[in-house]
Length: 611
Image (tube, rainbow, N blue to C red; front, top):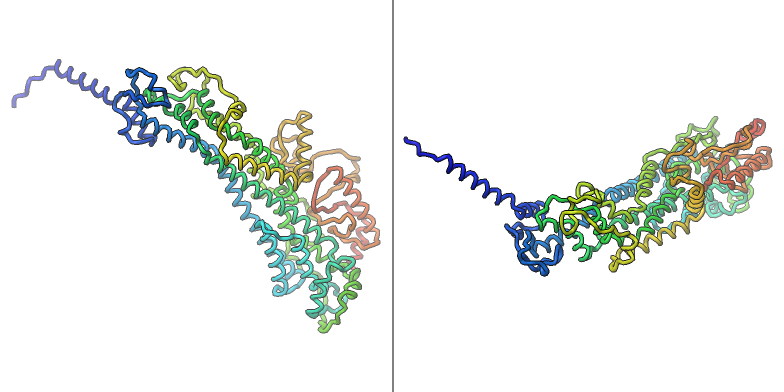
């Protein structure tokens, strides 16, 4: 077969023409715009013209009516409307993306915190039931309903229902008093009390003088009420923080704002610039104008976060809900043991109030020694200070730090979005960015946020409502915890700021966000000076039990009334109170830990053995 003659010159012309035609088809600006239009999911490709056109109805990217019909672009009015819708979505997504980390952190922590509290309640309930059964030999069938009712009231209170913690604690001690009374003395035969006798003892327990449990019930009530109250406030604040973030997530984007974001993000495509970044100044002005209304809640948000971060008692190392529930069975143990040891002091008054005859005496031989305790600690065992660095406490500190860093987030929201170097040009003097009209330097001044807020004509009503909620919550915290948890810390921080304070914040008892010059500050011990002989030091430690200022016998060691140990304890209590008033440490439930004098300790030991 004979091959046809091929003219090389003709082939070259064909290749050149084909290449030129392909270039016209693929490299045209409108073709790239169409690809970007589809890639971003803005709309259908048929809305984008194949070649530049003139559409007199375009009004957002430029005023087409004032242009010459020869000034054609790759945009139409239909495209512009699609860009406007996309601009609103872009702003909303940018806000949600900026909020996402903090929102998830707080929501996860809120759920974790509530689950942890419920776990602590269950554990405390089991420990208390075990204490009554194993140590005090109260049959489970007799105390189960009492324990269930007590911890049921605790759960109800923590669910923000109206329950009196003081009433719940007193009811618990009223209910167990007949069992404590019947087994108070091993020197006499224990007795099975009649139901009438038990009822009288329950109803009269709070009228007996001196009080069988002294002030243990009141101290327990005060500690639980304080820890639970602050814990509930902590949960309330976290819930409101999530609500505030959600409010900004669904901010109503006005038409003017949509127009601004359209010019910022999409109008460059009308001129075929699909890969040019918007100028930093244009971004700041556009975003600040759209998000200026966030400043409506900024001050209240910052104030509430600061108040929550300084909220100490419910979520700190001491007097926390974790500490109170973890030690509740130990406190109950001490109260019961005190009532058993000092039963002779109130026995006469009991018989006056409830003079029932014992109908069923039961002879019982006292054990040679007390049974081995299955609860956490012996009643008089000196406890070393426990370090609360568990998962709950560490998580609380982590969330506090994150929230503290986010105090000014609504003032810097626009700036944070524009700091994204992938999307926006970061060089203010760049001449290769989109300035809103063309590719070139942005020559307008960046407006101040406070000025924009004053000129803002439209404020989303939901932000106004949220502002009121944040204000109310902050005032509520300041009112409920004016001195011990918030006021003192605020005044202390204020004094530090006035004397070269470095801006770091105390977020709990001795816990500081930022470096310290003393490791002891981490656990609140700090450093100080004294006489050097150790006798001037007074350590107030929650771990040792309760102290009633008018009754030294409520501590971890029970001094016989009128004894030398009793007078010594009063003296030590006075020293402790003086130390507390001087600001060494604030506690809702405290005990005094002093090294006992040998002679007095021996007397106390002999007294315990005698009873």
